[in-house]
Amino acid sequence: MTIRRIVHSFYIVFLTSGRTLLELSPYLIAGILISEILKRYKWEKLVSGINNIPSFIAIPAATILGILSPLCTYGTVPIVIQLLAEGVAPAVLITFLAVSSLMNPQLFILTWGGLGAEIAIARLASVFLFGIFLGLILLFIPRALILKKELSPGQGKDGNLIKKKHPHPGVKGFFKDFWNNIQYVGFYFLIGIILGAAVEHFVPAQYIVTLFKPGQFLSLFIASALSVPLYACGGGTIPFIRSLLHQGMSKASALAFLFVGPATRITPLMALASVLRPIFLVCYVIVLILYALLFGLIYPG
Image (tube, rainbow, N blue to C red; front, side, top):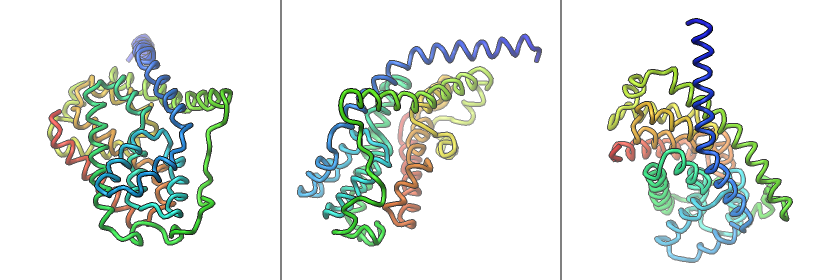
C-alpha cells in the first residue's frame, strides 16, 4: 500500500467519523441531559416504596425503576446497601441493581439514535424480561446464598462499604456534572466512532456477514464473548455496533453484544461483588450469558 493510499484511507475514516459524530451527538447530549436531571431524584425512596406491595407487582416495579435509574452501578450499590439494612427484600433490590447495570435512559436514547427504534425497543424488552426472570428466581433463593454476611438487616446503615456519591447541588453543580459526563462518555464515544469507521473501511463486509450470521448460535456466542473485552462504555459501543450492522452483522448478534457487555465489564462486576456472594455472582453471569444467547436465537434478526 502506497503512502498516497494510506493517506486516502485515513481521510475516508476521518470523514466517516465526522459524519457519524454530527449525526449521533444530539442523542449523546440529550441522553446525558436527561440522565443528569433524573439523578436529582431520591431513588432510595422510590425503591423502598415498593417493598410493601405484593411480590408479583414489586418485581416488575423494581425492574422498571432499574431501567429508569440513571445511576451507574457504583452509584446504585450504596442505595442497595442502605435499603438492605432497613429490611427491604433482597429480590427487589438485586433486581433493581442488576437491571440498572444493563439499561438506563441515556443508553436507550443513544441506542435509538444510533441503531434505530427496533433495536432500541428490542434491547429494552430483553432487559425488562430478564429483570422479571431474575427477580422471580431470587424470590425462591435464601438470602444467605445471595448476599454477603455483613449485609444482614440492621447492619451497615451508614453505607460505609461504598461511599455514596451525590450529584453536585444547584444549577452550577448540575452543569458541572453534565460537563464531566460529556467528557467521560464523549471520550469513549469518539473512540467508538473512529474504531467503527476503521472497521467499516478496512474490514471486508463478507467477513462480518460470515462471523455474525443471523440465527446461528456460534455467531451469538462470538458476539457475546467479544463484548466482554470490547464493551468499555455504552456511548462508545453504539457507533462501533452501528458500523458492524452496516457491514452485515445480524441484529440478534448486536443485541447479544449489547446485553452481555454492560454487565460483564470489570467495574460493574466489582461493584456487584461488594454485595453478592462470589458463587452467586458467577451463577448470575452464566445465567445472563445464557439468557442473551437464548434471546438472540428467538429474536428474528
